[in-house]
Length: 213
Image (spheres, rainbow, N blue to C red):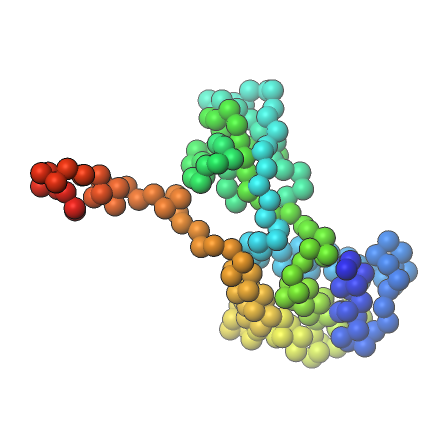
């Protein structure tokens, strides 16, 4: 499974001839590959797909950051967007609350920094529901780009994203995001820590009037 297979599936949906490869798509195929890349980047950025998530240590920079920050780190070069969270250790379940982004760097007060971020994985690692979503989304754009059929594009986009009132979160996108959510456990804010309940459960002496609150 590769990008050319996904593109050819989309082209087949609208009755067009396939390309030979992404590297040599032919004179008319350059636009097809560019559209595929644009659609893929857009769909990946709209939801935290579990198969795109990575967790890694950030490279520590020797140059001291300004504004009173203690340490500077390089952001992951292969990320799709800014990391979703920064941590001071690989075992921590509470993201850092104090940090500052500066172009390709993040400044913190910790000597180590780990980040959870999204990458652009190879199609071989996509689940089937996500492959179908990209095929539909690409086919919709090819319908107008190649066939010049605006009505077919609207129908395919409806299959991919649902009716307009769903604001792009219906159709196959809804199916894919629901199935993807089942592959990940529900996240708890601050690792499940709650200062209100912590205070209530902190009194462990039976003679204390606050015991059991």
